[in-house]
Figure 1 (cartoon, one colour):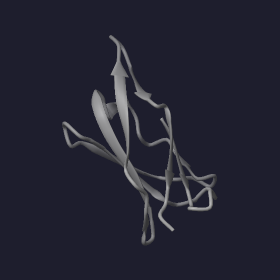
Figure 2: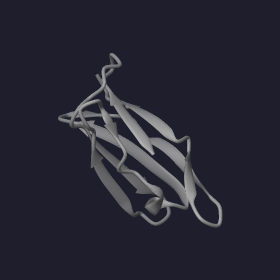
Figure 3: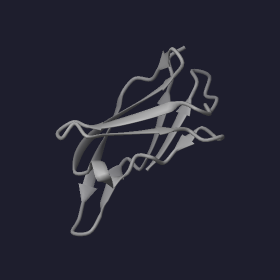
Length: 89
């Protein structure tokens, strides 16, 4: 899934840490945003169920956002499939 990290002013943040935690299994994935403020580290290995995501950059932290993994016989897709995390001012 695509995770964007932005400042309070909406500017994309390079090098922010994105953490995703499955609320049931407590498994987690951590990734770092690229030069355009995007991380694709969060994937269906955290499925099924609800996953909580947040971002950090230095002392700034975003509020947590939740996604739900919807699974069929072969794959799981996040709902929503793109998340924007806004760091606190």
